[in-house]
Image (cartoon, rainbow, N blue to C red):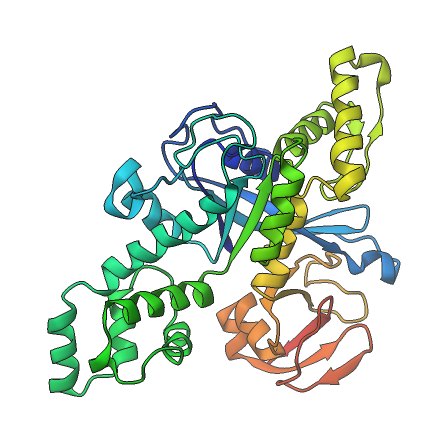
Amino acid sequence: MLQIAVCGKPNVGKSSFFNSATASGVEMANYPFTTIDANKAVAHVIKDCPCKELGVTCNPHNSICIDGKRLLPIEMIDVAGLVPGAHEGKGLGNKFLDELMQAKVFINVIDASGSTDLEGNPVDAGSHDPLDDLEFLENEIVMWMYGILSKNWVRLIRKVGAEHLDISKVLYDQLSGTGIAIEDIIEAKRTVEPDYNKWEEEDLIELTRNILHIAKPMMIIANKADLPTSAENIKRIKEKYPNVIPTSAGSELALVKAAESGLISYMSGDDHFEILKPEELSEAQRKGLEYIQANILDVYGSTGVQDALNYAIFELLDRIVVYPVQDENKYTDQKGNVLPDGFLVPKGSTPKQLAYIVHTDIGDKFMHAVDAKSKMRVASDYELKDGDIISIVTRG
């Protein structure tokens, strides 16, 4: 299952984001280090399910279908707040940086209102510049990675020269356990001085930063977007950084809880909700819902939480959804389940690669594939498209 990590300094709404995205209940409070361990839970990304287009009723197995929307599971890690000096161990930094690197994408939650300082302590709204938070977090991760990469550097370089080793492989071995692929290192190495013997400290730090950008893309959650001081800050952040999504995790959490209680009908990512039991709403609840509609949904089109998850998987990780079936005519598996499984696969994947993702034995016995929508046989190197329904034909 794909992993994404929620990170940032303390007291910016990370746990609210995590809770609303996963409908779990980690402890929340307004002080640093509320999250003692990295919390893990399942969240979902959402795509249109082919069931409506095909006029069938699906029986999902590894995912969920609600009103023609397919919810596909991903794993979220809620990493405790990082503070300046985390790479040196401050605030349990080394522990949480190590947990952070398990993920494929980093979701950096910041307080867009500027009402918390660099260490997560409450300050007057607008008195802190959230741009400082973005620079510090990336620098902490880079310097932590640099510390790993540069360990015993002089001895390593001598060994590379004496034994004619591949420098990319040596760097890869140094970063083992961080989930970074050697291909990411090779790509990042093209941006620095080709002769590793000439690398100075700044070259190695630049290389580390480039490896991070390639291997672990980061997106920015401009949280507390509804507060008065947030709008101007969000505008400035967007001018300097890509991948910024205005968010109100607290609003999403309130809507999710109201929906769970049966008070409203709401699907994450929607721009509206429907009140089902107005007579059961207290005056405070009614005003709260009105506030969310007017200050979040009407302004931004959603709370931003589901948009962030979808963006992380479908844009930053470039995944598509493909549905393997056995019977291309009925769109079923061998048990008769209609469109049972949706898989998040890298864009550019082939039917044979899909077969291996489903099961190693299926990949080993792969013969050919059929596009269930067109009923046409496709080549083993056919590039799968988002929403494809593929029947995999195997030997025996």
